[in-house]
Image (cartoon, rainbow, N blue to C red; front, top):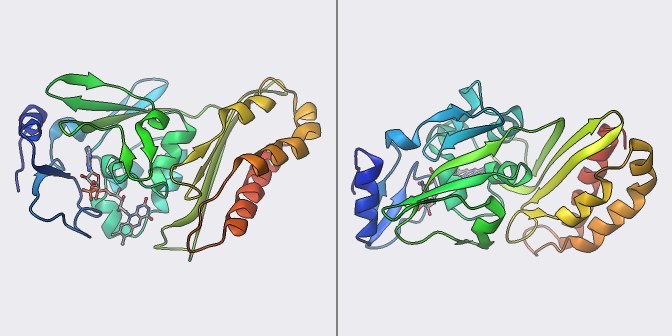
Length: 268
Ligand SMILES: Cc1cc2nc3c(=O)[nH]c(=O)nc-3n(C[C@H](O)[C@H](O)[C@H](O)COP(=O)(O)OP(=O)(O)OC[C@H]3O[C@@H](n4cnc5c(N)ncnc54)[C@H](O)[C@@H]3O)c2cc1C
């Protein structure tokens, strides 16, 4: 195990190969990789910062969920999702970067990264790049992350307007998502200026359909109400759930019900 004191040393070590990045270890230590040496990033000072950038928040990848919940600048929508993650012991260890690095469509903070169009800051000794979250996820457990790169931070835009979040688990507490949904809508003078809706734990990655969201953007609430059946029908066609512990039919039905509820709560 190696625990560098700063990001530069961590990136140099990572570039030599043979290391597994470990932050809180709440995923890595469940099935520790054989013969891999752990590169501990949990205490890198550069990855522990939360900064207010005005329209967005920059959250260091090694910030824990508890630190996120306690921060006055992390958006309430993200906090709503963080509060539903596991139990305090996991929230004290689990990090934003580890949730993304795990590559799961069930990762609760990742749903919020998707619905808010977050960007990631990836660092290596070659420099940094900032892909959009939806471009970073290539499939189940497949990430656009080079072997010498690590996630340094998440740029999370602050939600405009009102938001909706729901996680459906097997039980109220300590449940991995069976399905999760987040929606954000901004209505100005009775006109929808922006709308986004994301579905977690339905497919191999978090689902968003920007072309369907565009159906209601620029419409008045009256127009949106008239279009609601077509809007829901379009999502019915677009969502193709994976099979899992729960049936595809159940997943689809819950997705559409949550979407309906999100719209109803916003006068549509
Ligand atoms: C009992 C239990 C309950 C759980 N409940 C939930 C839940 O309700 N919701 C939920 O979303 N998750 C849940 N999890 C999963 C886990 O806690 C989260 O995915 C957590 O965010 C992982 O963070 P970590 O820092 O512990 O990651 P680690 O275990 O350290 O790493 C996870 C993965 O990310 C990679 N990684 C870590 N940091 C970086 C980085 N900076 N750059 C690049 N790659 C990196 C690692 O190499 C590894 O592949 C649960 C886990 C357990 C054990």
